[in-house]
Image 1: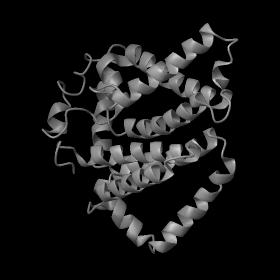
Image 2: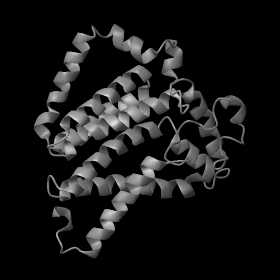
Image 3: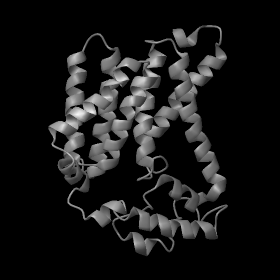
Image 4: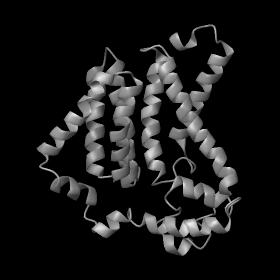
Length: 257
């Protein structure tokens, strides 16, 4: 856990995953300072492993092929399965890997995603009562019948999409989902439209890697909508900036600049 400032375990793991994805992306492009980014990647991986935070680790592992694919390093993409097999063999898995992911929990707790599935089942029943407009933004889970089940340790239903539809219903959920899918579409388009090696291409690939981690985390947290959703809004702002720039000067070869 973080000591100063006080950071929860998942927050530490997420920080390691994001810094690891950024460092990994920049190692593909930079010609100077590779040692610096290699050290950042190493520290990030150690932080990620020591935190034993499962969703950031899953997001990071999924971000690697996304980064390689969108950066058009297809050849390196085929090395990932080989590296995974080597790691499993080195750790004498599956026992070590199972122990790592269980983190001392009972199997039933692990299978319920640390009690999340129970919350989601109750949330689904609540959603069916008010599917269109919900119970009020940021109040759907906290000030409803779920409050007693969540206990004092949780202030949300621990899922971005359930939190949205419980708060503002399908009417608001469609808007957020549109922004989320639009962001994926724009960043993917930028990564494939920009000339390889340009700043736009580089930053688009980096943003896609971070977005992959944020997307995985959105299943287990509410970080996309709760204060401060810095990473999501930063990527959204970047994508909209590039889109508006390209529309304003379509003949200036913006993507190749």
